[in-house]
Structure formats: C-alpha cells, structure tokens
Image (cartoon, rainbow, N blue to C red; front, side, top):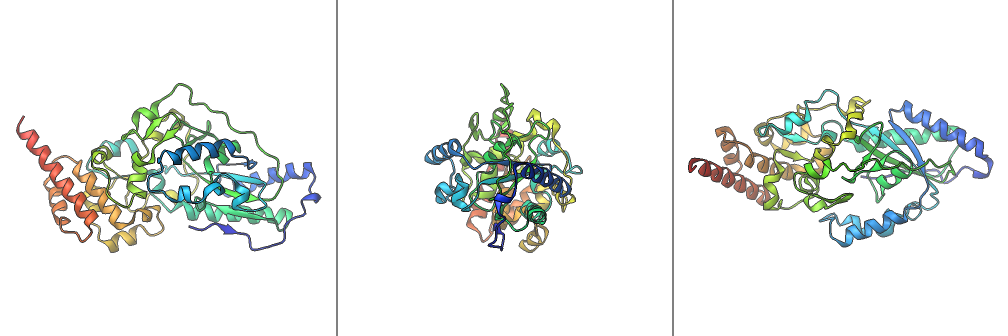
Amino acid sequence: MTEHVHPSTKTVDRRTLSPAELVALADRIREEAAALGFGKIGISGIDLRDDEAKLERWLALGRHGELDYMARHGTRRSRPAELVPGTIRVISARLDYWPDNAADAVETLRDPTLAYVSRYALGRDYHKVMRQRLQKLARAIESHVGPFGYRVFTDSAPVLEKALARNAGLGWIGKHTNLIARDAGSYFFLGEIFTDLPLPIDAPASAHCGTCAACLEVCPTGAIVAPYELDARRCISYLTIELRGSIPVELRPLLGNRIFGCDDCQLFCPWNKFARKAALPDFAPRHGLDSAKLVALFRWTEDEWSRRTEGSAIRRAGYEGWLRNIAVALGNAPPDPEIDAALAERANHPSPIVREHVEWAIERRRARVSDSCCR
C-alpha cells in the first residue's frame, strides 16, 4: 500500500485566505466530498498527545502481536507533522460499506457449514476505492485554491486514523475500539488528507456507549479485554488476516465459521441500527462470498483463488492463510462426509501450516464423533 503525494512543490499562500474564505472553502470541500460518495468529512488539528500515550501503553503490553510495524514507526503515527512536514490540518472522511444485497450476516454466522467473511471484504478492496476518491477530493480542493501541500492516506501509512476522525467530529471510539457515529453506526471506512491549509477545525465527537457492554459480551475470543482495550493477539480479524503462522490451538474452536475477519462486536452494537448502506456499487458481494459453503471455498485451487480475489482485500491473507482459516472452520463444523472428504484431500498439502490445521480439524472432528458415540 502507498500514500499519494501531490507532485507540486508549490503551495497556496495561506495569507491570501481570510477566515471567512477558509470557512467557505471548508463548506465547499464538504459539498465535493458528498458528491464523491463520502458519508461525511471532518477537519481536525494534529495534537494527539493523549492517544500517543495510549498507543505506547498498548505496545508495551505486547497487544499488537506480530504487527511489528505498529512499533516500528515510532512517534510518526501520533505526530502528523513528523510524517508529513508542514501538516497543520487533517481532513478525515467516512465511506459507508455495508452491502445492502448481502445475505443476512447473523444467519450466515449461525450456519456452521457456511463461510463467514467480514462484510467489509465482500466487494472491491476499499483501499483502492477510498484512495481514488480522496485523490479526486484533493484535486477538487486544488481547483478552488490552486496548488497546495497534501498527502492522501488510506490505511497506507502510520496514521492514528480513528483518533483523527474522532477529533474531526466523525464519531467516537467505542468500547470495541472502532469508531461509531450516532447517525451512521460503524460500518464505514476511514481515509485522510494531510494538508497545510489552515482550515477551520470541527468539534470532536462526544462518546455515547454509556453502560452498554454488548461488544465485550459477544466477542468470540474475549479480545476486548476491557472497555476501550483490544488485545489483537486474540482478535479473529488479526488471527485470520494478519497472523502468518499457526493460529493458537486454544482459540481455534472459538473462531467458528469465521474465515476472514469478524464483525460480531459491530453486528450486535445497538448503534448499528442507524448504519447506512453502501452508496457505491464497489462493495457489493462478489462470487457469492456472503454465504458460500466452506467446502466449496476450500476446494478452490490457487489459480481460482487468485482469479476470484483479484481486487479484493481478501488477498491480504494469502492463499495459504485462506486454506488455514477454512480448515479451522471445517474442524468446527458438524458431522458431514463431504467435509471429511474435503479435509482428507488437503491432508498432504505442501504447506506445513495448512497440513497442521487440516490435521487439527480432522482430529477435532474424530474426537467429537467419538464423544457423541460414548454418550
């Protein structure tokens, strides 16, 4: 992933813009953003000192697991002007992704023979969609003020995007550590434009989780270890997407049929009754991944997988990770000769990671059948 850098070295003379003109420019930016399909944009300053302290504590506790890049970038993640010199404002943008025509998420979760793919990954890779629209927004700003300094980011560099979005008034960081908006729930992507334009700053969003603890209670692996605290090492999204090695044995039964990501903490969040459907067709489900059979996906060859995940965020897991994750889900599935046969077909897979998880799945299924027969 790469951030987009404006090629011009010439920036707008900020002294020529009066406070009234800057307010008008901010309003025009909102209009341009709406026309591009963004749910909302907001503008913040760059002071993230409190969030930097929380990040340092999280890293010190080792809760980032194998996400070494989280520590590698140092303070550039929490100090925008160190990442992009000259930055004094950040324009944060929301882009709704909930697919209106997808199979019911909860029903899919409750059918252990089906594969659950996080709803954000059913369609086109959001990095590309968001990046292109942010670039168009930056060019639209340029058409109003002339060349100016900026960089566009879409989960492509060390950026504390949720903290910036909160400060820009786009929502508050909930107990599950995702951003929540009162009028839009939490099913949206975030992207940023770092800029040297002295735009007026929006008021930060206030928090509205109250006494609700639904996300903590439904998290399958207990990854939300306390309100507003996530241990990535237990998070199913981390385990099925970011982790490259073996999924801890004790956590495998808890994954259920989730093969790429997990939405539980959002699915059962009361605020998502206000979630907005995706305004763009890019996020519509592809290849029936909203309710596909586990066995069918497990039998995809690497060529099929490459072809059917082209332009998809699923590529991040890799084919080996894909098979590893599905093997775990098949191990958690009910008795079925077709599942047993599919696992047997992969028992001698060239990847030791895949073989290990297939063997675990076969043994788990045998043990469950044995326990059932002995009762």
